[in-house]
Length: 186
Image (cartoon, rainbow, N blue to C red):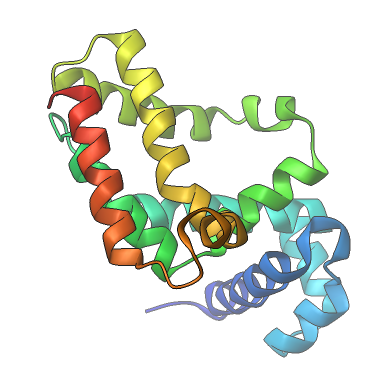
């Protein structure tokens, strides 16, 4: 059973996730988060210290949910992971939006200093090495999979310009998964 404090934090994080995904770090307003959560604005500062701290908490929670939604197991194939990752971004664009806002608002060093996030990606790399890729191949393959599966969700206008306005997400997913399989021979 959740305590009152846990429920309050959950409400704040849910409201902040929607606010940050829509408006980014610079455009988000703590007043709107507090109003959407139905909670006093001072609670945000009590729990998270600052708007930046709240953004960090939202991003961390969203990444944890994403990892749980599309787990990468030891020995998992890059094509199988691409399949799940494409669906994840198609069905829940918040993580991608938050990462894009982070890229626009903060230097790369901010992400590099987060050991939890580094461990998150290190586990994915290790899963690809368990699948038969060497460390270098695993790193580049992970980056390619993430790029291919997120690009059209991040920039749907480019997909429409290249593939035509009526392109099929299912066909695109199938081709991306097939391409990843051919590139890795796994």
